[in-house]
Length: 241
Picture (cartoon, one colour):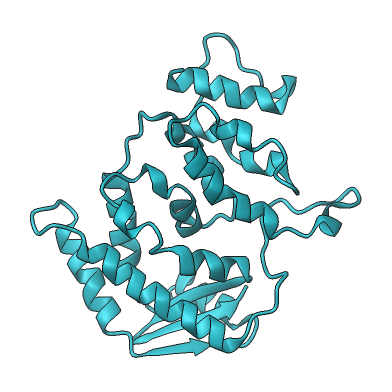
């Protein structure tokens, strides 16, 4: 099954309304919101990965996004359009622990980059930013959204940009976009409109990075609990969305 055949196989799960013309190629954009088709239980999602060589690994990664949903939210005409976490209570100690684990996991990941690698310079910049983090702060609910808005509006200068850029460049350089799983890029992003969540769920595809497979697991756990992160100066800030 080549990539186009796989794409049509996936679209067929959506019914007649998702059918394409015979001469129209399947693109990643056609599959935006694809994993939402299996809400809330994830029933049938195993069919998505059945044709893939590492299908069981991808399936294992995706299952938790359905486990975190509350079925009661899907009763009635209005249902969630994204996978929203925050249905579990979590202590401040747990949040701080996840923040520290994330910092250490990212350090481990960027330390794997060889000196002659195309991403070596940005990875080194990211390591320096991570080494400068001295404090983890848990924000009151809603405060992290204000910080994000200030950064978007240019009121506050963004910190930690090297970390975001290094991770994006690293996973891109280790991806084969001709693989069948590459068609699900937008589907993964649309789960939470969060690139790091998408990276974590697609990790089995990143060549040479399997040693650091769990580097983003703390970030994913924070997302499940309904929290986001924000880098500022020498602090990692964690707050509820």
